[in-house]
Image 1: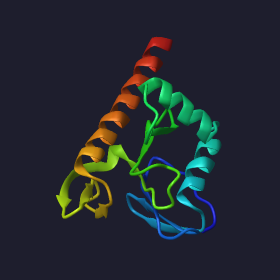
Image 2: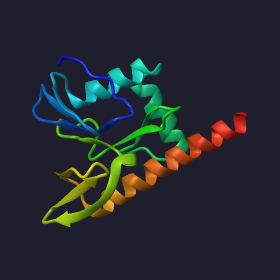
Image 3: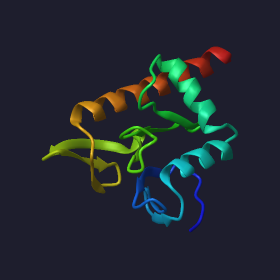
Image 4: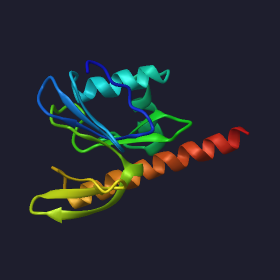
Length: 150
């Protein structure tokens, strides 16, 4: 598959090498011939915004500037957070809504997704918890803004 747009079933975007990315969905997985960052950029554009625009908005909403979660699509609250700096080739992106639980395994974290799948990521427990918190805050701020517009 050459292109992929993130959707409400997408759980994680995982780089395999410089040119390929594994996309994990609730019931499927795909090997995509794009970098993870390109999937993020294209998905933001697919839903009507640029990655840079989404990033800038999230930075302002969270008053933060490093490893920022991104709202890919507002109506379905599709929010992904990076495991590292988004500029790094091996940065994975995780949809916080699909994390059931997690635990430390040596120097990594094993995430159990809501569909029962498990996968290890190169991220500390503290960093993961911070990313989950910031993603949840971003979702909360977005929801409050939607309510206030009505």
